[in-house]
Length: 173
Image 1: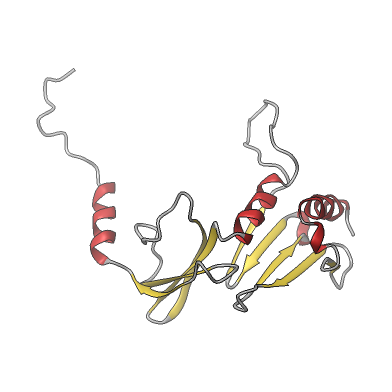
Image 2: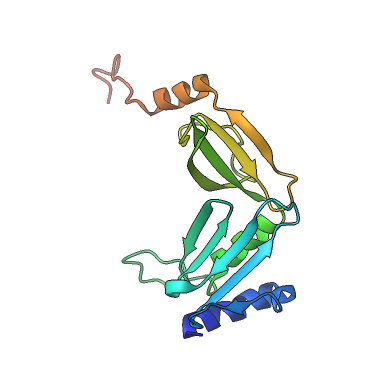
């Protein structure tokens, strides 16, 4: 296993020691792959370190995580531990604080994203990729069946993005 995968495996098993028997190496034996069936019976959590990045997936959604969050040009000291974001994401996902939102358009898959329930709304607004969406959670408690997107909410959202006119502002300082 490469050194990136070894570092992530240590961080992962420090956070989730109960997964030690589930961790396995890929066929190429250079990275970690982990698959865990959801207790809801509706999907698998996939974690991989292929390509020296952590990829987490569930259903048709996946996301890539860097080892440490950084900003180009940032020269200060980082206040995060290695893999802190992906470990916290997994913790939140496993308690249904994060669910996966799946969009469909005309009955076909249109896209997906992670939805953090503690700061997001279930309503689909400007980030809609289709005409319906559903939610899929780890335990199944946060699942939402296919729901039509409210066109009035979508219209209001796009109107809120339009530039405001400067009427009545002449002569003001």
